[in-house]
Image 1 (cartoon, rainbow, N blue to C red):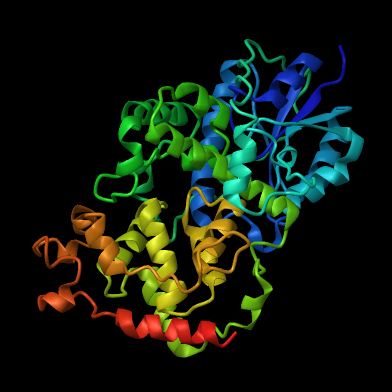
Image 2: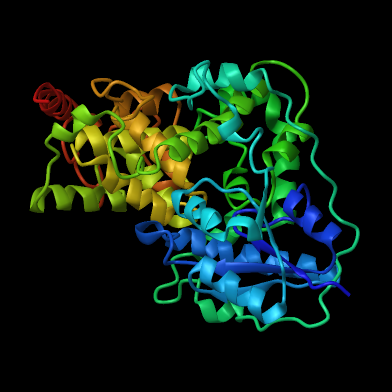
Length: 454
């Protein structure tokens, strides 16, 4: 028998449409391995909400592998070093893996050199293949989409292997429970399990549900009380389903299908951005904003904490921040409103908000998170203008967030539809709900004045 090969798994925790798995199986016996590497990412080690999801996703993947006579090997440590150890322990001559674009993974992939074969399949098309006329990477999404659209549809998903050959001897593996990925003191994840089913089966169920609601997506996705979202983002982030699978499962025509496909393409675009600008999560895309004077000190910290806790006095913002804390996810429209609020109403550095989302979101994606925050902040290479300041109260009424607020801010549930968007102005703010942290007009003028100073 030939020596087994290693299948290095990261954010590709699935058996269907898994080109690295297919290639490894064709080579012979395989050893699937996941390495919990908190060292290589540095400050960007995965946050608490992602860890909850990862625990359940790895458990589900191991169960699927065992059903095919295989299993998942777990190791903890610096990924390249652990892979080298496994090669020595098992005699494995080679590693197969899906390509990733986070800067720490790019560095690790380069370090493994010829011992590693990378496979594409986590995107509609490999982002580095979508180039400008001069051969560079796109910095503007609309131009990226136009170029990518010429390369679509994506390749067909590859079938799941019928069998997976096990090695003659398995290497030692950590126990998942010993990683302490689940919160205990306190357990803030009690509502997560009711909202989500991590794993490949959960991803397929979410896709089936979304396919039945697709026709309403273009409008419903902007209405928090309806929540027409696909709910696929955490499954896509952890690679429990591929964009190609999603594309193949959704058919038809019209605005809703096109709108959602553009959302899938945005993931590809953000991967291209961090590939060409690896420090994009920490550095303004437009250097002129390095001069912008963000608020700091005790008052700013107090305001930031109020935002994190959903105690700003703006019901639509508070509903979103409480939803984020309770189920590790926030409606996309409200994400933008809440992000704009902390950046422009509170004049707090966008990186503070980015870090909070990173820790609290089950779908916190390095590229998406960075690109989206810089888009809202106006600091990015492709972004909204800084002076375009979202008005939370107007947004709340425009997108009919009444039921959304009632669900996530229960102390306001008894208010009328007209009053619930702005209890202060309606003169009926309950004693247990805070007054506005700052008035909209005052916040807007302060933000615009700060922008004029750069």
